[in-house]
Length: 331
Ligand SMILES: CCCCC/C=C/C(=O)SCCNC(=O)CCNC(=O)[C@H](O)C(C)(C)COP(=O)(O)OP(=O)(O)OC[C@H]1O[C@@H](n2cnc3c(N)ncnc32)[C@H](O)[C@@H]1OP(=O)(O)O
Ligand SMILES: NC(=O)C1=CN([C@@H]2O[C@H](COP(=O)(O)OP(=O)(O)OC[C@H]3O[C@@H](n4cnc5c(N)ncnc54)[C@H](OP(=O)(O)O)[C@@H]3O)[C@@H](O)[C@H]2O)C=CC1
Image (cartoon, rainbow, N blue to C red; front, side):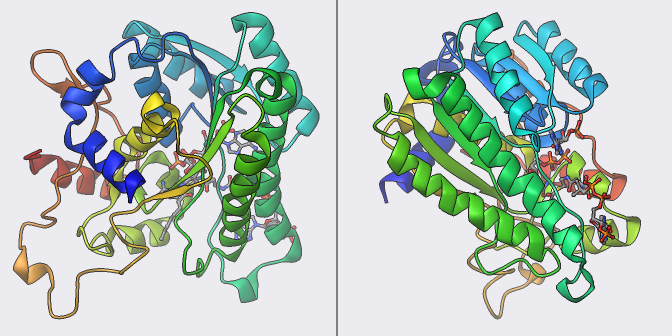
């Protein structure tokens, strides 16, 4: 209940929270590593942490994407560095952490956001296909956690957030990722218990539901069509935004979550509890779409324009986001 209350308060007062309670320099002493920070949700997390004063290191395989995001952040006055990593390589993961500590003096926060999968019914999936996705997501996340522990946090403490995926009731057509992400959720609980005594390391998960993000570009057109046609598949009647995932990550990394350890926070509009509206209700109740306004980013400046204007998603998915943006928050 407490986590729900804290989260409610954080969201309800997000304008206040991130501009005054969460001061602009809240994370000024923190060095945060965001894997997969060159695209989508990772890019959004990197922006938000930088806007609250953190030194952000974004790491992934494609340096050009990382460089572009680092430039965006620096233009807005933030501090951002880029480094290359394939999270599947445990030795390189440790090298990465050692390089960050050598260059920036510490590593206080780690966001394991890099990951992904492809769609395939289990009956059609090869053993290698299953193993590949488990290796990327589960082993890759463990590699990064262990490297952060060995390279800095074991001695100095820190906070880790693992991005997983909402998979409470299994993950039809994505058995590999469902198994891997469930493994991460359980691993998170173990690390929270084992590593808490090491200078108070906290380890938590955020489980996104379906999010309007660049990740959708990885899927073929027919899959995107299917996804875009299903945006009522949560009780909110819409998908989530990158900013809504970033907000929960920022919260979990912040002192406001100092006593939260080992949880998996579903940020899914309730889709893990119910697909769609309660029985007897449908979109006819709400012809304009979702009644739940979307949070699309930290308000910036006098015009309250958030600083992430561009979501690099397929057009059909972006169209949904534009529809959500029209509904103004009453919070
Ligand atoms: C309702 C929708 C909900 C959506 C919720 C989730 C959304 C997201 O997560 S957003 C997306 C985030 N990003 C991604 O998903 C990244 C996209 N995927 C990839 O980058 C890759 O697929 C990979 C990293 C997961 C695997 O790439 P790689 O290591 O290069 O592996 P290979 O191409 O060598 O393949 C190994 C193995 O896997 C089989 N395989 C690969 N793709 C497919 C496919 N589309 N369908 C079926 N099988 C596939 C491949 O065949 C290989 O096995 P063998 O054939 O036995 O050799
Ligand atoms: N969008 C959604 O609806 C949902 C997303 N998620 C998860 O959230 C996370 C972010 O997703 P999203 O932003 O949408 O998707 P993206 O595909 O845009 O992001 C995935 C990121 O992971 C990086 N990455 C992939 N493999 C590796 C690797 N081996 N080593 C290092 N980096 C790697 C990619 O960069 P590069 O290719 O340069 O390495 C990319 O930046 C992912 O884990 C995704 O599965 C979970 C549920 C729903």
